Amino acid sequence: MPELRKDLVRNEWVVIATDRALRPNDFPINKQGVHNLAINGFCPFCEGNEANTPPEIAVVRKPDTAPNGPGWMVRTIPNKFSAFELEGELQQNRTGINESCNGLGRHEVVVETPEHHLELQDYTMERIELVLSTLKGRYNDLARDERIKYIHIYKNRGLFGGASLAHSHSQVVGLPMVPETRHGIEDYYHKTGHCLICDMIKQELEDGSRIVAETEDFLLICPYASRFSYETWIIPRHHTPHFGAITSDQITALASISKQFITAMLDCLDNPSYNLMINTAPVNVQFASAGYHWYIEVAPRFIVTAGLEIGTGYYVNPVAPEISAVMLREYLQQHE
Ligand SMILES: [Zn+2]
Ligand SMILES: [Zn+2]
Image 1 (cartoon, rainbow, N blue to C red):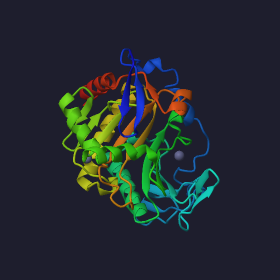
Image 2 (spheres, protein in one colour):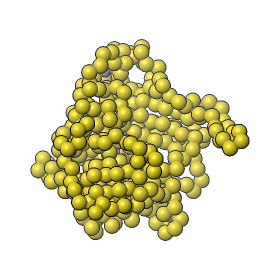
Image 3 (cartoon, rainbow, N blue to C red):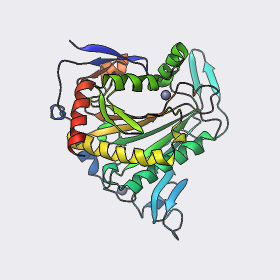
């Protein structure tokens, strides 16, 4: 019998089919997502095409190269199709029953490599560290603007991950409000006085059935109420609310485990589309970081979000996280 499990971060239910285990090949959309996206023409993110993007905001460049030209290693630019603009103050309006506010915020793209066909799993350790330090830098830079209340960092890979360009990039969005999908963390803190993620680490270590990998600094688990099949969280073991506080030693450790995990996950699951998201504490909101603990969520995308999820908020996951964890853990161990 399937089971409804409570997702404590989002305060929503997830339907887990605990009695059957779909394998990656049972999902018909799997490979198309990545292959179809790779077939496209002109790429504005390739080295040499800098004139086709807005001017760079931050960049790591080789010595003696000019801004907005070739010679860069990691390049941050504004998102050309941004829905947000960082100008003026937040204005909230009400018209009858309707509520609105201006699209105050910022949307940036971090182009992770000048080379079109390289992806996270292909990068050198140095490049992954460079990308993570850039993301940390963008986080802390945006956090300095008092008007920004939440910073969401994410990466879409493949068509079913929502990527519109194959060239590997991450995105950073500074929002004027804290998304409601984080309020479960605050509720838990107010009820118990504990950090939900720290309590989760403790319980998962005791239980053991959903652990994918363990390092000195990070714990990888398939969470109890996983919304997506083979969803995996990379959690720093030391309680830290903000991603922007990551140390250089942690960046090195995170680069290493991320490369190992993403390589194994793509191989084991037959090269799926995925979303990678960094969940972190709100910024510039007094006392709001209490109870938050940053972590990375990697969600392979085998099923398109459909009527049930959109209508009820209940995600249906046909692979129990206990089964996902065993598969990913064994794959990682065999390919160390
Ligand atoms: Zn490209
Ligand atoms: Zn914590």
